[in-house]
Image (tube, rainbow, N blue to C red; front, side, top):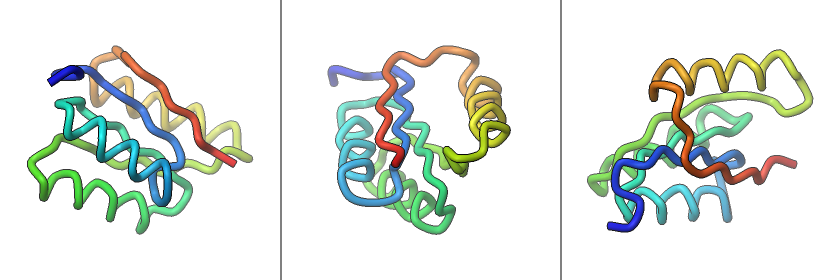
Length: 92
């Protein structure tokens, strides 16, 4: 598993390419921090990842609100110990 134990942040992970990338990285052993502005969609992505045996956590933030972006990265830092190995930004 190429990404075993690596922390991968995927923004826009609630649907489409973001959800697919989050799932693909998890399948390769990554610990995925899935971020989206729609909590129900990102929770579904995380549920699918964990049901398949992967590791993931969901985070909600709206890119148009700087305070939410700051808060979500603080939460990711606290959850995963400050190390982000891969960052994929698909926010629009």
